Image (cartoon, rainbow, N blue to C red; front, side):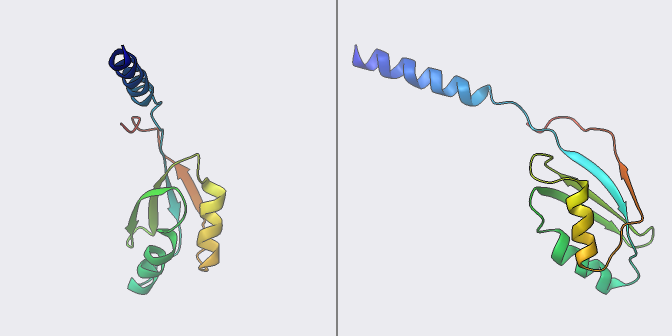
Length: 103
């Protein structure tokens, strides 16, 4: 009898873990002044550690930084302020279409 109860409890717990909702991620392109390799390193060393940030791609030629983040942990305003802290004013932010939920 005890084993049947234990098995039922384990099944119930495993179903709640499986039924967890999938997270959406937000991706946006930030236009910032990137003039040299030092600017790229400065962005990599500071912005990469913002809470909730999942991915970062820097394009020095187009002066654009593409960021992907968890919307429950950060937002565009917080990330824009992070760029301002390293003296990189954001001239434009373009949100990209929502991607598929993360599994």
